[in-house]
View 1: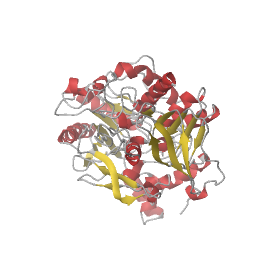
View 2 (view 1 turned 90 degrees about the vertical axis):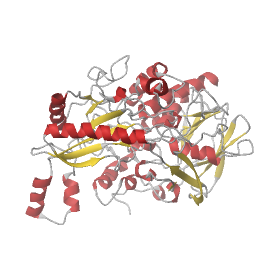
View 3 (view 1 turned 45 degrees about the vertical axis):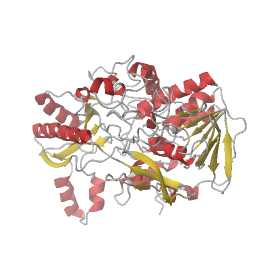
View 4 (view 1 turned 180 degrees about the vertical axis):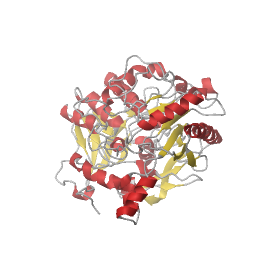
Length: 543
């Protein structure tokens, strides 16, 4: 069923030329934030082609997709046409992973539905084994990525406090491109409670415009940021896809790559399918695999050969291994006063105070003060059976007094947490689907308990009646797929080197959070963007 004229692949145009580009310099697989930034960076001087498995969504449909988002009868996957055989996957192990709840296949990728929080990893995140006694040290450190972080903030357009109001943030070289969003009304309530407890509150870097920026409007407050921003004030990767096309790049949608052809040390072609049933081979001098922490290892495993019987670029045996996500910790309740809940669709204040206290027993974690606690009036109106005065009474009694906190917790890399292929189930092209075996360790669960303790203290100091706690038994993922093609100095310990070029193949790079050796507890997109810019520079030097 379509709502408001929104259509999936069935309504996409059939007359698009999806044939290969002759004499391409660079082939990028995936048009999410990493692939889009690489393409934009290289397109001015190189012939670039981008292949993406999903459609090119019509931006004029976003209001209709917003209508889906606010109707309780639809879930997040319905907003962006996720599901079916194309997106099939399976789970094994004790922890089930709801992959389709928060992914998008299409031009723009996950940034079409993300919340838009963009923090830098902390310095110790790059040296976890040395500084915390657990995890791994990256083959690069914060100083290597610091200039790329600044550039990524300019490219995405980040509103933030410039580090001035957050003494726990890593060092910066310049302010954020835009000023931070003002604290919300509920932020002010939380700030008073935190001051009593000696807990610091600070602004949050957002990849959304607090003022007009980059020919995009300031945020107009729709409040449906996750899963859709109709205004375009929140960054999504279509910005850089369109920019790359203006420079001459070719972007081919609905072109799922089936495998990467190769010889012993080079990728020679990306084999992709099209909606009309054709199969093509896109050749290039350099290949960038940028389809995320699940689909990237899947593609490498599907590209096995006599030279790579266990999967392409997998001489180390680590492709798909060490799958990580951030774990959620939360608590919420009600106050005996208005909180103006759901007036803002993203959070504007946070606390990083406890982040660098991490050690072998307790992982890094950050705390978030939600602006969207409790149901919205629309949700309440559409989920009840009462009307008229009864509905008005229910809205008066049940709306506007909720408060809640969240938090993200680091998951350490584990060999028993991985992505592989499920030979017993296939997608719409007959390929084995990704199988996710997600394992969560005791350190993360202990840290969730620690975060819950602080959250309860703050809510009780606020005077709230705590109604729910998302603790170790009720946690879930943040849908940040990391670690499956990890970076390492030693070719036997990981998939890519410090430049994100595969150890096994001279002309293949991976731009993805899959290259993270450890996860930290900060949202990964800004680090993905910084690494993508660094990948593009490395390719330019080598071509």
